[in-house]
Length: 220
Image 1: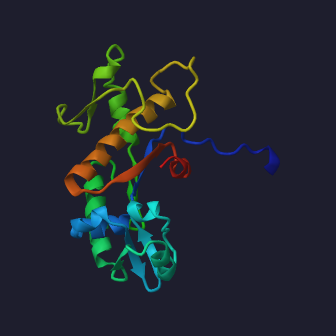
Image 2: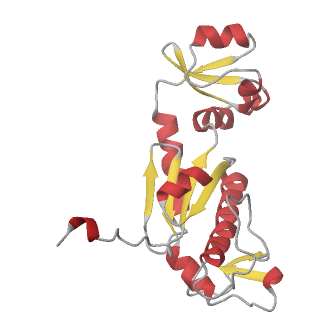
Image 3: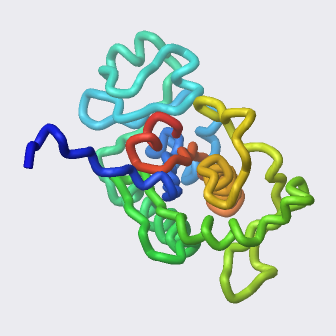
């Protein structure tokens, strides 16, 4: 068979993948252990470089992977915390990972480093596709359990929860296999989990919602 005539494999565009990326993770861990540092420019150093820094430091021109000496010249008030012992960061990463995994139905949850988590929530979205009331999209309910119909949260499905890269064709019909509708549901689940991470653990994050991991990295 002529190799050039082979068609590339069709992408699985029915999947819904969430990618959580914790904001300035090392800095958040340190700030939550010492809340007084939240209002100050903060850098986490490993040897002579900054592993990361918080947003207060970045507003003053400090950047991660910058030499400590250079960072102190730019921002003399920068608070420095030693970050070579990875134990506290590893411990928090495991706690947050287990929390997110508790929402998974298929256990397809993957941690990348300490600060990123991928979740395949296709089955949760599939279930909620059948629960949508097309006559009242603004007063929708997202189910988080197959067994308990009351376990979930209210949401407004007239719009995406968050920012959107690209736009939907205005003439496209929202049928049961519409990719937009699936990603719409995924965006509200992502928003709900981000809020839970912040209210229960005091960690903020971004979350990309896409049909594969590669697209996730452009949307997170």
